[in-house]
Image: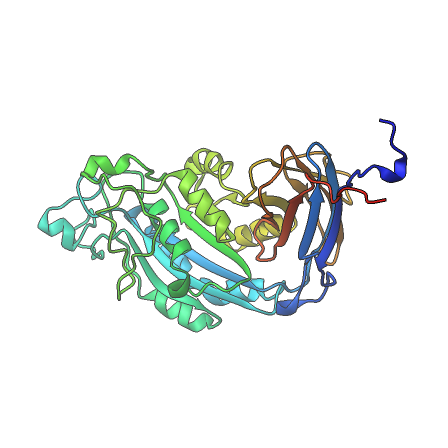
Length: 391
């Protein structure tokens, strides 16, 4: 009051792009998200806005890990999967020049009441004594990601069906190990798809108590030299929330290919796991390639922009500017569907501050299912750069 405008210090918020590569390119050298780093100076109670651009690339590399239920009811499916390798790689090479596939299988924990622990059933869990099944196991990593379809078919052709007692399977144990054993699976920093095939439901956290297993799932890799999950009978099944967190952090997109009777439970599961889809699998898995391609197209054409590691006192919202006019305003995440290859879409990001920060803070914004991210650094403007005027 009583001061001229030139003598009033009134800091204004601002933002500055500190790292930016042009969105574009194809194949493994692509930059789909821009900018890569932004620095913000904010006053509490005010917002700053900036634009994030995503350009969907052509030929973005793909890693696909095929995770199969080998309980006895999947016997006819295994016969069809043996021939899958070359057909699947051929289909995926229509959308990318760089694709790798791997294989793993699961049954359930090898203690009562999940399997029969009689000596005969441990050797051969088949219901018919004249058939030869392999001994039960929880999860086995069979083949690391490879470009060689013949190696895939060779490894899968040596797989034998197994068996368990109860209906739910140990699939969540298998997904967790496939996600966290990065080096053994061979995951690259590309689009990561995990195809999960089963004809029944799954055990989840708490079910391990039935077998005397009380330790919570630790979310760590426990694969032995032969690819078997060694700690299955010591750690409980993972919770859905824990699994969703791990998959999201690893940028792995699950495709649940399940038979008709199990669809409702997996559709409910998919709602809790970001960037996952469910497809109906024929009883003999004969439609699995078309199912995978439909699911991939669905996942890759939907762009979800979200933040992580948000500091206390920082707020974020998104305006989505989609070509099909489906975008939202002031939403908790950015989302555009039906995004075509080489199409560019923009998001307006609004960042606010509720109180002063003690020091610079940062968080990340990234498109779900992609390895790229944007780092946002936030400083608060809570002091005046002014001193006593000396006449």
